[in-house]
Length: 328
Image (cartoon, rainbow, N blue to C red; front, side, top):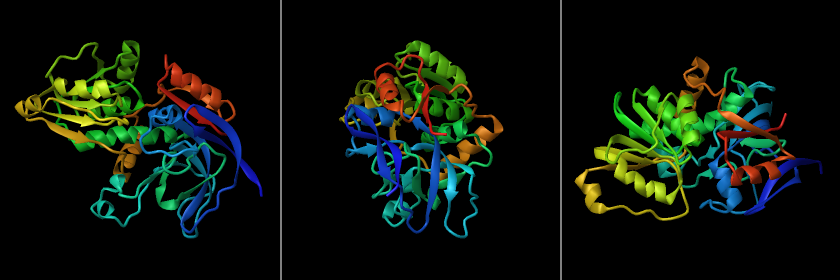
C-alpha cells in the first residue's frame, strides 16, 4: 500500500516524521492536500503533555490551508481550489448541535486533537468542514482558525463600543481577541509578561500595550493565556459589573474569591472553539484588510524539519508570534 509522510507526536516530548497509509475518504468526505499548517498553543501543549483532551500518538495540526484534490459529486468546490478548514467535527445530532452550538458538540472531534490532523501530505475531511476562502492566500487561510477563536470570544462577550477591554496573553489567540474587540469599537489594551511581545502584538492588532493593568479597571477582560496564575489574577482586573471571558484552557482547576465576585456582580464566561459564523467573519475581515496578517507569521519550517523546530519553539518563544509548517 502506498504511504504518505506525516509528523507524529507519539508521546509528550517525542515528535517524528513517519510513513502512514494514504487516507480513505468516506461518503461526504473531500480529499485535500495541506499547504500550510499553523502551530498554536494547543500543539505546544500536546507536545509538552499538557493537553486535557488528548490521547497519543497524534498527528497534530488544525490551523489549515489546503488544496482540494477531490470532492464528492455535486460539490461546488473545484480541484486545485485553496480553502481553509473548520477543524471542529460535530455530530449534528446531539442537543447542543440542535440548538446551534456545534462548537460545544457533546461528541466533538477536533482535527489534530481527538483525531489525526493536517501535518500530513494528504487528509480526508468532511466536505461540510471545508470552507471556501475566495482567493485568500495559503498564509491567510492558515490564519483563519486562530483568528476565529478570538472573533468567537468577542462575539460571545458582546462588548459595546467604547468599553474598556483588556486582553491578557499576547499569543495568536490574544491577538485575535484584541483585533476583533477593536473592530467592535472597544478601547483595547493587551498585557503579557513579555512586554516586547505585548507591544509588537498590540501594534498588529491596533491595540495598546499595558505593562501593569490596574485592578478593577476594565469592563471586559479576556484571558488568553492558559495559565492558572494568570486566569485567577484576571478576576481582580474586572471592574464592577464587568465580564471575564476565559478563552485559554488548561489541565487544572482555578479558584477565585466569591465575596469579590459577588461584590462586583461579575459575569464569568467560557469561550470554546468557533463556528461557521466566526470563520465567515474572519475571512471577510481578511479580504477587506481589516485583519492584516502580513506580520503575524514570524517562523516557518518544513515537515521534515518540524520535530527539531517545534521542540525549540516550545522551549524558547522569543520573537515568535505564529509559526507555520509549509508543505508545498
